[in-house]
Length: 441
Image 1 (tube, rainbow, N blue to C red):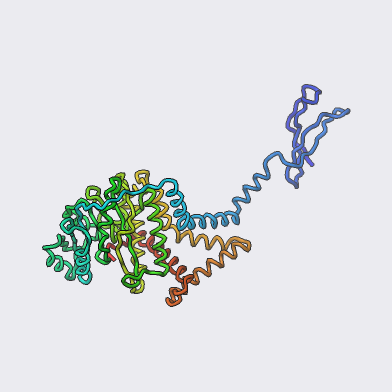
Image 2 (image 1 turned 120 degrees about the vertical axis):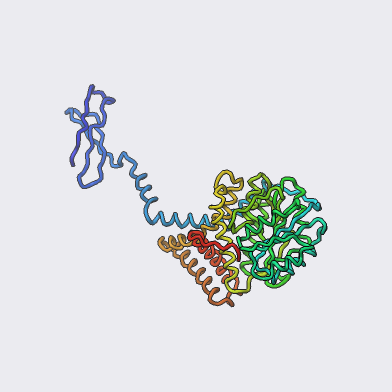
């Protein structure tokens, strides 16, 4: 044992005047601190060892445990799980609680403002006649409806059909295809209605759809209204598969957002805004149904969801078509961040909702991968069980892809749809990174 003096002075012999005299440490052991006790009869100081170090070794060990690789991996697992759970369930729970505290009802009245139905079409000769007939059956004063259709560089008979209907509709014939955004901008220039109703050719709308949208504009705080898209496997038969379940969850979130303020985005197949709130859509924009209503919210008006204004569509039967449409939509979410960076700034009054509803879903594929790896690297029976449960989930998803008939079983269908949606999100990020954007599907 060696002792190192600290250069003590002793001015008196009283007990209170004695201070620590030195530090003693074994060369092969952790340093131990000692203090000098008042000297004995022979005048020599007595060194008393203190085995508990004066520095916070326990705190240091605790910090080391927290930053240890094993602990960090477990923390990563829980962080991923929390974010994924919040994205799909937590945000909806938050909205439900918020609605319970601060519900914002909407005043509705059966008003009939002048309406301009705006449609952008490209190569729609097969479906355009049926769409125009569908619009003639609307339960809305026909003298109050203007129909404007823009043909975006169609190479089939779309333009010819529009010319044949010149006595009933206003048409914009664009010789070159510049994308849906440009077509909508050109069509809106001819629109004269107080309310712009945006529809797609593909879907049919219920007879009362426009009336239901218009009724919401009796509330002066409302600037845009989204209708509801019903996915059907056959006319009149709603989809009961896992994708239909996804749409039910999405509809629930939109209802809660609407009841508590504004929704993030609208249904592209059917939505309406006040004419004076329309802002020209940037060229090449994939998601007019997000940027248009977000601009409305930026102007201080509410964007609400009206589930009684219904458009009906059928799930794509062609293999991979539904996946392609989802990839396009998610690619558009990435594109918005470049076209409208204000969406991620305080200038966006719906910033929290935008991040919760849109952006976190784009991160889920990465979070799923990190959670799988973290559970594989973590020790203990709990994490092993979680790892194998995740593995089983992905095996079911692959099984549903390789053998479509197995999707009749709900666990397989849910796993397959969940993985399909997140695979689409991953591919969307790749498309955005390499600049691969498609303006039409």
